[in-house]
Image (cartoon, rainbow, N blue to C red; front, side, top):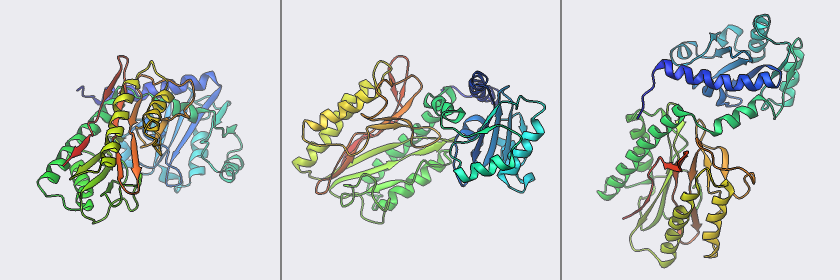
Length: 383
C-alpha cells in the first residue's frame, strides 16, 4: 500500500482547495469561511487542512488559505495552510477573528465579491455578522461553497481511500480478536467487547472509535441501536447478538457490524440470518458505477419483501471524516444518482424482531472504475 510524504499530502490538500477555488471564481465568490467548534462541527476544516481540532478556515478564490486554530502548537505540527493566525489572538471571539482577518487581507485578495458564510449559522448569529462585518458582502446560502464541498467529499481521493483502508484493516484485526476471545471464553460481557475494541484500536494506531460502540446480546439485539450502547450483561448468549463499531485512522472512520449466532437457533432466526446474507450477496454486485444507488436499496427491499419482512433502516451510507456522509443508499436517494468511483459506502442489510433478536451484516465498500473493493471483512460468526 502506498505511503505518502508530507510533500505529497500537501499537494493533495492544495488540489482540494484548487477545486473549490475554481468553483468560487466561476460563481464570483471572493472567499469562503468554514468554522469548526463546539457549536457546530464542520469537517471541511479538516478536509482542507488536516487539523482535527477547533479552528476557523478562510479560503480565497486565488487558492490562498488562512487557518485560525484554537490550538496553535497542534496546528503547526499537523495542519497544512498558507498562513496561520492563532484564534486566541482575538480573545477567542469568532466574529472578531473573521472580521479582523478579512480586513487584514482585503487588499491582497479579491474581497469585493461575495463572501460565503457557513449555512449552519443561526439566523440571529448571521445578523450579528452582518452588523459587525458590514464592509463586506456576506451571504449565507445552502447552495454555495459549503454545498459544493459536500459534493466534493462524496468522492474520496487517494489519500482518503488510503486512510479508510487502514481503518478497515485495523477493524478486521479487531473482529478476528473478538472472535478468538469469544471462542476461548475470555469475553464474558458486552463491556468486555467494547473495552477490547477501544484498547485494540488505540494499540494499532487509531485515535478513537468512529462512534460509541454498540454491543447487544440476544436480550437487546432487537434494537437497531440498543440503548444503552453496551452493558455489563452476559455476552455472548444463545441466540443473535450484534456488535457495531468503527475506528478512526488519521480522521477517517470505518463502520462495520458483525452478528454472533450462538447455540441452537430457531427456524425463524435461521431465516433472518439467511435473508440478511442473501440481501448482502445480491446487493454487493450493484455497488458499481453502472448502477443507480437507489436500485441497490430496492434490491434489498425486494429480498426481504418476498419473505414478508421489511428492513427498518437504509441499506447504507457514505463514510469519511464523519460516520454518516452523503449519499445514503436508500430508495429515496436522488433518482438519477449513480454510484461513482471514489465513493466509500456501507452495505448493511439488517432485520430485527422482538422475539428472535436482530442481525445485521455491514461492510465498507469502495467504488472503483472496475467495479468495487470491499475494504472491511465483517461476517456472521457462528458459535
